Length: 66
Image (tube, rainbow, N blue to C red; front, side):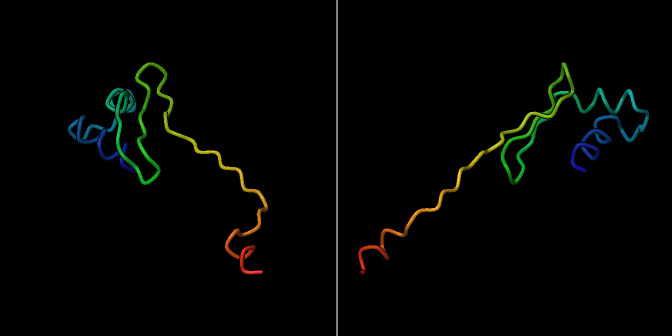
């Protein structure tokens, strides 16, 4: 939604596809998940992807209580 809103602001409310796409190229903004941008050459979304690994581990505090 933000990209559409900002692109419409840049085009002065014009809604033809070519102008909206050109207006969106190179945009970047902060989202709850970090910085997001639109690559001006490919129009691909660029964002950071976090990969976490969760292992079954014992709680060290509880282990000392025994």
